[in-house]
Length: 416
Image (cartoon, rainbow, N blue to C red; front, side):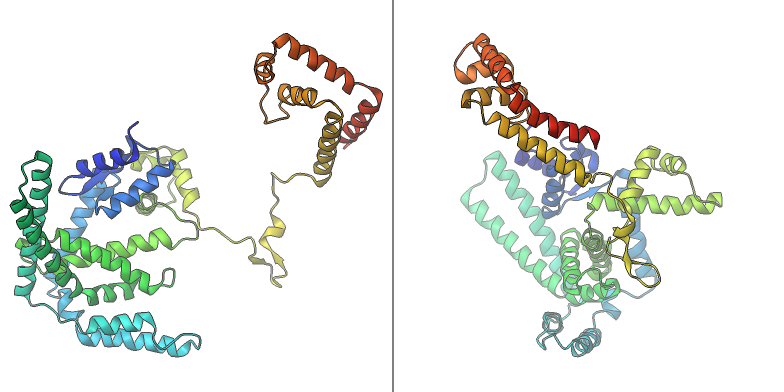
């Protein structure tokens, strides 16, 4: 198999300008239980590449984007008309201030409050300014592709490189202006998702990443405002963050999407059938086996602390009622330890060579049974000589003094 970096480069190239991949593309190289599977998902995310379960999910996402934008536009309430006012920021700021005052351990210079004050000073953009910036970003996107192409073909001159880099730099500046003018929209969206499972500032950070993705993908030619389009990406970024970090035990993003899909199908089948659907029925709709459905259900459960109190008086914990099938009986453990000690003491009465030969032959050295030939190579002698040493060592161990000590421990183990 090719190296990790080669595979990553191949996947990025396959994603192309649309920056879209499916999980089957990754499964060609890694299974989902391999460490590099999670690593490559993170690296693809850094490269701003979207990975979808399948084409059906991708189509559903596109339709959801379009429906979401159409709904906002049809309602005549575009986000920057009712969400981006200074009053909105002041209201959030006051709410944060109230929380600070109610917490005696919090400092007055709370980072959230400071951040809100900073973004409140950034001027909003007019529609014309937004289009102008979007045009520069689009030109920069083309310049970046052209630069990569000319480098690969070996036709890039110093003048071309300088001119293209200037265009790309102007596009980056335009993107920064477009993004920072919409920071308040991110705060507004994060406020709706603030349920306590993820820190508010972390929600804002993830929303800002979604905002930057929206700036890269925005098509001003469609006629709607940037904030209208960005709202979906901000919401997706925040929702993914909650799914990714909101659990005690992290579940990969692609598995969260599978869990959500199964939940939707389960609710749909419940309505259609008038009862809870069987695993086989859910699996048929999802195109997977019933065993896979059961597996998804198991990993979707929230973990429960063994310290949770049980009973009305809460004087017991859940751990008091759960047995450990893998726990060893203390008496058996002590007898095994005594047997190991007696065996080691018996072996130590032999010569160093005899002891090592027996340990190698009976897997007492590293858990491996060595052949006579392998042991012979270790000592630089023939296999016949090793057989003789082994036979002599075993004869010594059968002496009454050594044998009786081992027998007493072994008999105790059998009686237990």
